[in-house]
Length: 391
Image (tube, rainbow, N blue to C red):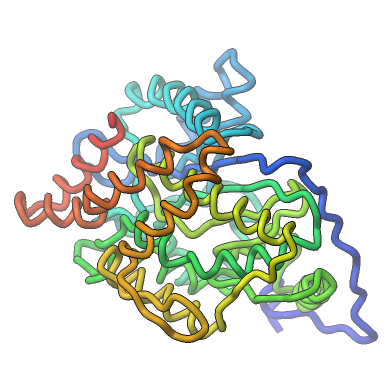
């Protein structure tokens, strides 16, 4: 048997299920993680310059900035992370300041920041792994699929005040999976080809053994038993190695929504964060009021994920357990009206309303295709995405 953890672990005796503490958040706070690729200023290709970037970050005098600029699996990536925020506006301003710091360092390296779910022509074989046991073990276990992960996304944490709310809200959030994916879809091209998908990233990432759609557990004890099984069999060593599209983050007291593709600009990022925040808080309030939250069968959730990944804003989604169907943009439009009072109470009415502008712009995947149709060049696609960071 191979020595790596992914091969499994032989043992005997009953599985020890350890309690998982959920450090509840008294308020529905926000945290945002924004992954950006580094691309060569001249060629537009992915650039393995993250190590040099982080040397400059470490040499800087602002420890707050250092805490908000993180390494990722590959040296072509930088992740910008907010502190604990109370409003969407606060989170976006936090990211704006960190973005300014990073952009002040990338010029000397000859690289630009690129915000999309995939790169249109980057090749995995030329990418370098960030040093560290955790990343090396991931690649050792996942092999070809792990090395293919040239993908970038946005993760939104929303604070939850009681552990017993986490799993019902998580399951109910899956009904809005296609809305968030269709709006954020930005990964139509892969390895020099148009894949025909609006979000190829969503399809790629689920190939990792602990990624993809979450299981819909009803009780926290079921989640604890699942984690115990995962650890006992060597599938994971740490809880954060469960890479679901929506997952509990017990150490932070949040639900982490990881559905969205990479985003090219702060305006659209604000819209997506506002929608995510309002959805989670609305579900929380409905649960608090004694409502039983609706949820959909896993096979319907899975189909909705595929439809949104394939067709983006043109997806016909399944709305409910009765299998009613509707164009996703029509459903989003009604959803924005229903969530407007929630947005007012959270101080993000303008950001939520800007989701309509995002739909009107056609979404990043459509804009990328329009550039390619017009210019016939994948490099022009990269340049177009890079330029959107000014918006």
